[in-house]
Image (cartoon, rainbow, N blue to C red; front, side, top):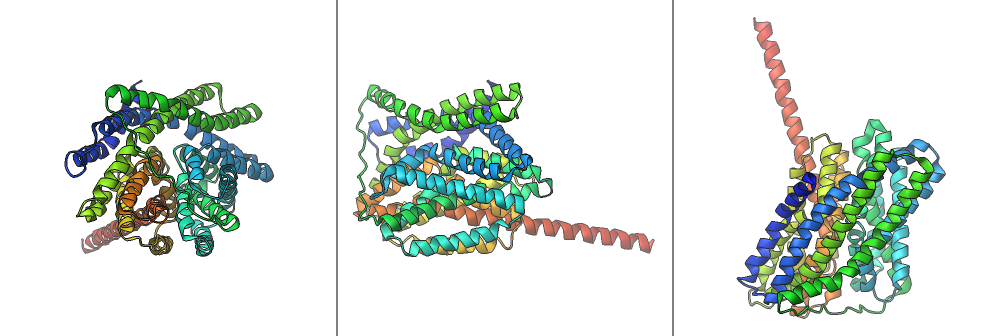
Length: 501
């Protein structure tokens, strides 16, 4: 119970800044209907409690489960079985992501099931590729360079209105369920190779994010979608606190079902794995099952809170600011919101803890969080600029990825893996349910093309941390060199003093 209180307290400190920003906007430049404010308040409460349960559950279940399975797979030495199981894990956890279903509904001309299964196959294949990289010690940056070249070549042949959705898919499929499990799987695989465990622990999410982009781009070319069947957002109108509670209660069963569909395949896989290998002891199995229950409750509350409470607020704020005569303030406001909202992403805290643990504290979670916040803040500023001007997303993605890939040659290898993992982690449910509606509301208010100008915000959020995290790595390397030089100078001076004596 004490740990749960600590997690909820952490969640409160993460969600409080963005809540204050929304309240400040609602009493100044974007006065909100009282019903929308009440939805947001209750959504924020559910968000805090949900994040607390989820964080505790991920620590108790997803992390040990992924770590143990990864360790057991590599230790077995049976490569064919490892390939098959790794593919199955990637396929299962991707289908388990609730946000993937949302993406499928947004893509016109392609059946939902075809898109979901193809994207899941892409993640499965690239997870296998990650395993090959760890076992055969392939440098991550060369794989990233090769596959991003393929991505941008395919993007050249894709429709402009379809391209942004394809890049968004890379962020959507690495959500709160996928990230803890896959990251722990990578740590488990890398720990068997003790010599390079720190470097190899990261990169699975990075490569896993490329698979969906390639899959959606290929599907877009093959299916030739004729147009973007975008359905305008509908605001929920509530007037009393009773209406607010009714709205949440009416939507709750939907998220109970979605989270059940998400977690049951993973739980089933774990039970099958345990029945065959007997890897986990009885006490560990009980702890994992209890942790899965915490994760289940946390995700239901979290998703219900952000979808029902935060989505209308984001859409309303975006549309109201865009309607102002000085709508340019959308850019700085977007940057401030982006800086603080990343703290409310549940998977971000999982990544930061993982980085701190694997690096034995050398890379602090505070430094990681600050770098991510700066990156997401910049990405939101650019995204809002795109909404106002209609500039193509490729003018930002191509230079951004080029800079990120060039930086990979100058930073410690571990930072490249962490940076590219962080891109997928930062673009989670908060991006899809608050930032995307914010951009959609602004775009509709301005009369722009939502599919071309508002979509792509997830892709921007996933891209900028690649640069900021690697800059953090560059700064740490220079600091380390400066400390080493100072120590050498001190040693030389001490030696000269001894000689003089």
